[in-house]
Image (cartoon, rainbow, N blue to C red):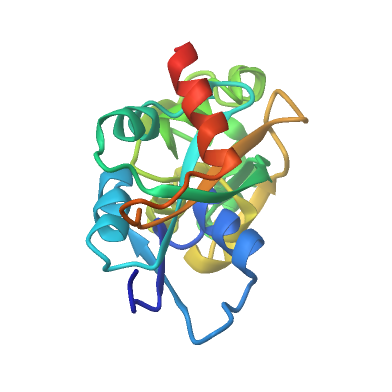
Length: 216
């Protein structure tokens, strides 16, 4: 057991993981809990295992791209593995975000004014048709999160980001195009975990995840 009042997730704020944690626990966490973003999935596992966080939320699999490798690897290697107490599916809706200066340049010169597109590596394969049609010559730059992509875009005049709508408000950028993903029925499944207590019985969800891991 832990006395922590922290609910950790793969940050920063504005990511799909942030949407997952608020979807599962509520926009304002009850019971004086606090949402805390962490830098990596490994950090999330460590935080829940050492009691720094009461709960963590991590991405598990995507309906288009399949398993999230880092999470699968840690579930297999971590001993004792955290207890899986819940899950939630977040619909992946990608938006093209840009600073006002970039939008003005596109208006004046067309989409060739965009020289750089920032996003998380997993996004490219989910927006292939849009990118090929609108920004075929722009450099695609990998960053650690879609939220960070939006933040970078806010500082540049010839770049866009592909990110969640939640990132737009946080980064203070504007929407250029909405729902540009190839698959309009694309979801990411997130797991909610707590610290494993010695001797505790595994939940049915725990056992079902074990079966999924064994199939790989």
